[in-house]
Structures are given as C-alpha cells and as structure tokens.
Length: 67
Image 1 (cartoon, rainbow, N blue to C red):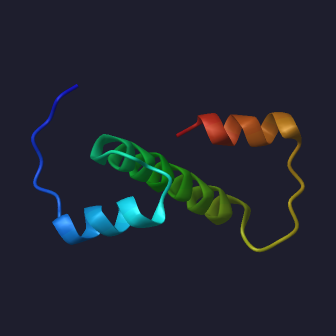
Image 2: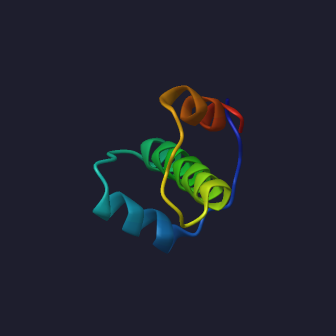
C-alpha cells in the first residue's frame, strides 16, 4: 500500500544507520514491527504483573493472539 507521510528526516537517517535496513521502506516496516512487539510485551507485562509467570503455553498464545 502506498501512503504519503511526513517523516522526521533525522530520525529516519538515524534508524537507517543503526539497523540492518537498506531502504526507507525497510526501516519503516521494521520500526512498525518493533513498535507492535514492544506494545504486546507491555500489554502482557501489565496482565501478568510483577509476579511469577504461571501461564501454560496455550494460555500465553491466547494472550498473544488477543491483540
């Protein structure tokens, strides 16, 4: 899908330097995937709290797919 967005050029160039991405498209896609991964981790952490993890693999997969 093609979309026109205004991206901070300094941030984009820094992201290109510190990642394995070779193109602007790659760095944007990588960034979106990382943002989603981080949000899912934070959501999972808020659901399980600071206590010991006692979820089964099936329960963990259910939580992962819930978002």
